[in-house]
Image (cartoon, rainbow, N blue to C red; front, side, top):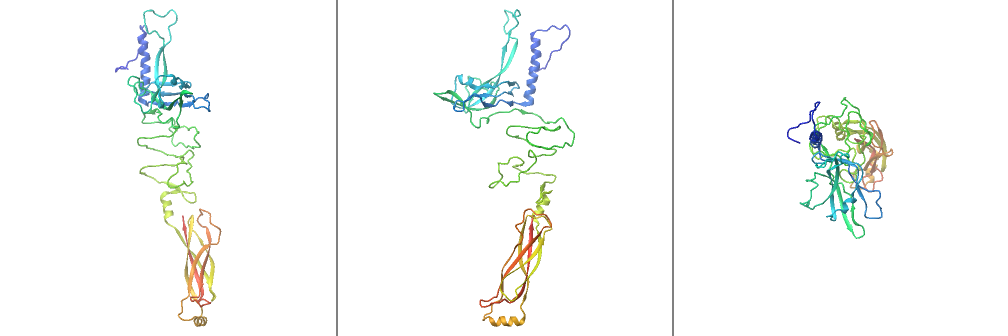
Amino acid sequence: MSVITQRLRYFDGEYLRSGDFTDEQSYHVDMRRLLNHELHLSGIVTGLQIVQDQNSVASTTALFYSVSPGFAIDQIGREIYVSAPYSLTHLLSRAGLSTGLSELWIVYTETQSGSPAPGYQLCDQPNQSTRWTESFDVVLRQLGVAPDPNAPNPNHDLKGICLGVLNVNYDSTDGWYFSAPSDWYRRRHYAKIRAQWIIAPDQVEPDPVTLDGPNTFPPDGYIRVKTPNGVYSEGNMIVENNLLVGDDYTIQNTTPPGPGPSPTNPNGNLKLNSDIFLNGQIYVKDVNGNWTTLTGYVQSLAVADVQLAGFARMSVSGGIGTFSGTTTATSTAAFSTVDLQPYIAGFRFINQTTFNGWLGAVAPPVLGPAISDLTASFTTPPLPKPLPAGTMINISVACTVDGGAATATSSLFDSVDIACIAIFRP
């Protein structure tokens, strides 16, 4: 295109020659390619995958491959359109093949075609073809090897697009043949868009949306970005409205195996490699499944509900052994675990007469009476988790009382009061 942009201006009686029609066509072609080049970065728009042909025989290693139909924009804005599968077998008959990995490039071609109608061809004028045929060619470029300086370079000279990688093989039985590595797509280059704003047609706010699954058609006002592998952002991503993660907004609750996050559940997760700056609240679900602010949730984790579970008076009746009683506790907040801590709240000695008898039965030196093995446990079955506020639990408390001397057969205690602290943890 010239520095000065011009297009034809028609008027009645104007004399036009072939150059005028060429200028007319060049204007539209150049403007379209300029738009392609400036609006898009070159690459594959759709299709153009390296696929195995249906006529390949699975029992052999010499499989047949082709390029699937598709569309691409090359490095100077020219369109490359493949309307039907293109067999790569043609490439195996070209000179200069080398074994090993090679990049597969597609390049734009343009050739003259068509002849004037009979009786309208001039004998003394060249280039009388009536059409330009826009097509493509597929070129191999050996991976890791500098291109031949005497041959066109599909990346620079021909301004092509890389479709992937193939392995070129040769043996005496099958001759030259291709095989596709598992990562054949690793050098594919997709088209990109140069844009400051991408605006959906419907701008009515708010727009309710339900993401039912990956095949849901986007409702009015939403743009769907669908790529084979994912979306990569090289700059800042600023979201003015809601950011929904996951097809159906379901966050996986399964525990990942081993330390760190698991790669087996990619949907519904948000992975960050730096800081979060937040000007609002983060909402999470508590143990009862209710949404609460992150601040409130952390406070519920940090503050436990401590309950005094009453007293249980155990009558020793002058004997020794293990004595038990029961008590209850009721939580004031939702909890997931409860810890029990029993303690001695008080005790009563035997009367004076019994004490004198007990003292006379013990040979000096007299050892003091002892209470040991103080325990508390649930008398109900194991509690499900989580439990709501107001749940009452039954607690069994027990203690072991001995006489305080090896020769004692009775205890100095008449009764022991046992209390229990129940610590309800969110």
